[in-house]
Length: 476
Image (cartoon, rainbow, N blue to C red; front, side, top):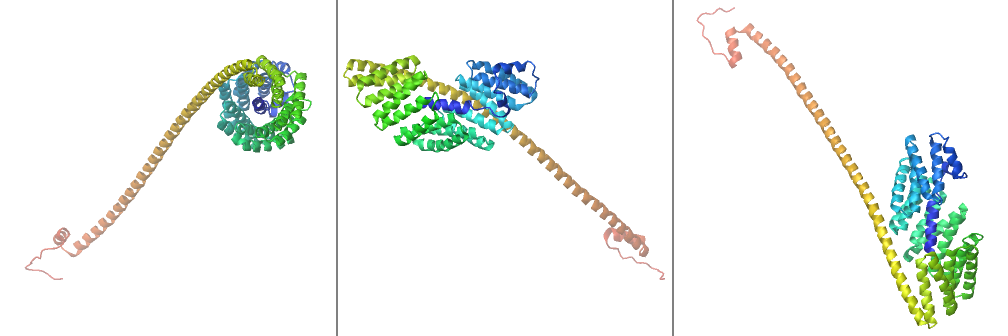
């Protein structure tokens, strides 16, 4: 029962509470009335939202595939109008249809595209929405680590967006992952106990009921029947007058069975069964039949226990519920053994072995499906990784070009500086040479004024003059 309830909760929480803002405005209209407006609608964002509303209504119908063409039209028109929000929601609804058909790889692909667009426009509510949905896929596949990664992302995004409903749903989803293992029950309780008052404040009865049921189941699994009864009684009040009231009564009966208060246990199980019959809910009837049989088995009323196990066997076959058939085979075999009818006990023991083999085969198939899913996801992540590497290489190349350009500019600048220095020194030398030439001319003219030209020339060449002898001279 718990697995069914948690699975239902995940779909309720992550998938059915999705639309916000302008998209909600048309939900009061029928699909037909929305379709009628398309023929005269202009190609604008209002038409995009109408297409998305039709898609949203159709994916929850008996023909969910009918939702895809409208989402595709919305995506095409949004791209034409440069309206990214419409593109993001189109990818989301296409993903929802694939998820509903258990085509998780396709659902994941579309939701990742939706997430990318939401991130490009910084739509925090949309980002949180997609993170939550992707987390559900990982949870369904048993990848608790990845599921928690995305649920925590959804939690943070919802808080930043001020979306209390999605924030509360994220708290519950995180708790449901921790509930998978008894070792992490304390963490599950921590998040459920945060989610419960938040859901009550929101006055969201379905969500409050799911959280309350999860709390009761944890305490029942731990053998704490007092706390379990407290939450199951609360659940009874929440589900009063609804189609889920058998589930609350059934769990109260289980708690009393654990307490060995068999009279009360049988009373509540019988009330649960009568309610399920009145509501024509065969799924609930199936669970409750085993609950009643277990009470009779615990009180050594094996003939009555056998009657209910056999009824459960017949209903399990009708509903094609393999796990419930296995549980009833166990009860029938044990009851026949207690009644000393060993031939029939052996017969059912063999049936039990056969059904276990079938279950193991199904589990193996499920594992193979999970491997395929993980392979596809890893392949896509690998492709993304290659794109990222290519992007990094391009960035590195641009960086190298930038460095080379800067180096060229720096080198060219240095050359200009050196050239300027050389030119400046040359100009200085030219000026100095002119000054020296002028001084040389002045000195030569001075020497010619006081010495004979021959002597002055010799002094300029050798720095000295040879003494000369004159026989006759005149002194002035």
